[in-house]
Image (cartoon, rainbow, N blue to C red; front, side, top):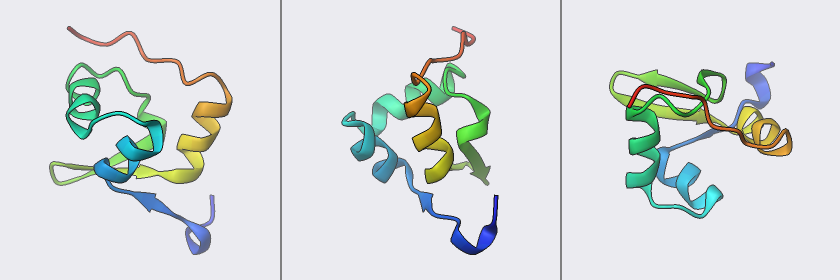
Length: 68
């Protein structure tokens, strides 16, 4: 992945992209249901990698069996 064309999404942008509320995204993160390949944490804030998110969606957007 080239950092030259790296496009990042905030939690709000990611939620809008999926058509869900940002609170829902935080629940998924808290329960570790999102694959770690689609986001990184900068401090406490998640930053989503748009190309990885698009690939995840194209591959079925399966949730990870997380901790409840």
